[in-house]
Length: 472
Image 1 (cartoon, rainbow, N blue to C red):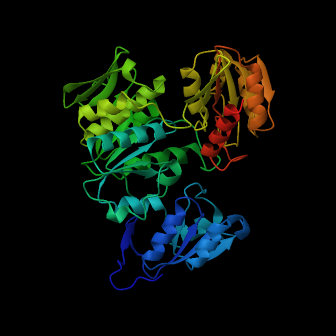
Image 2 (tube, rainbow, N blue to C red):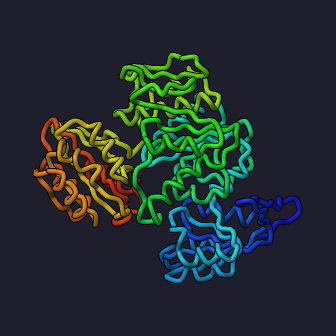
Image 3 (cartoon, rainbow, N blue to C red):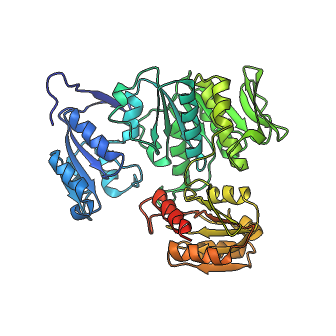
């Protein structure tokens, strides 16, 4: 597909350079959810595109067949990155390590290393609210999207959740609201752009199987605000010491939220007396809602609500719309989702908990005794942060996947001395949990790990868990 008469031949700026798309040879690494729309977009703008993926052409199946129909050349299998030396415009799937030798070599010779989100941020004419953090991103993003819809704004939710926006971004009205959940991987590929309003919910070790170091992970998160202008805003968790320190790096306005104290600034969101959520704007305090009115369980969700309140008010939402959503929203699927009560035990699907910090939130929220199903693929992060709560509140620990031994070691070090089971798969884990659960217990799948040892993503893992529990 070549750009013809009447078809835009765009240039885009990337880290200070202006790049022509039409006529360029572009390599797209990773043939996944966000990159298929990106490939179609690049083709529509006149680029010649190659697609690279570690999977074989046979494993890619219909996706590979579609790319061939579009005229895209394929590079697959173990040497899928070998062709990068022939391309000067390279788009990466977010989760690929950016320090791989072939990618580093391409960068060193001057190739543009880009990502779909960076292109969306450049092309978008609407106000963009971006959310990142080690936990709480999805709930906060969803809350903000629902509030902006309640205001009556045309609203698009994307990034790490929802639908990739690259094919529709040029048609989004300047009056619309775009809400993006942004992972550390995506933030490495923004090309020197940041959203107009940015949120950092919290920071704890995560994705160290992909990032070269914790420092690299933190620096990626900081890209959500580093390239803002003086009229832009970053909203920071005052209770997280590392996140609070980001204020010194912010080029725009800094607004704090806090669950435990009044930050003391003329614009901030906080919980007063463990009862009232307060929004202070330019010194004036606005009535918002009671903690008891929040339908989302857990202290961590008070933080998510505060962040969403601040962002949406600054984005133009009125307090009536903010209240209407914050007092009725009951949560997102796979995030501490109440699923079933069976023989007096309550079962929860928390498959979205792909890090120990997220499992900590679940354990803090649920009352003991707890039957915990945990484990999965290894992200290279320690499990010690969750171990004391396991020792305090968990009556039976059921472990799956390659990380099972590491979780067990951390919990035993923290003093856990009750039941531990090793399950070969989710089916056995659910059966063991059923055996251990008694009336009044809380049974939760909260893996503290990614799902890639057995599933394509956490959604597939959560749906399988729910189907197994539903069949009990």
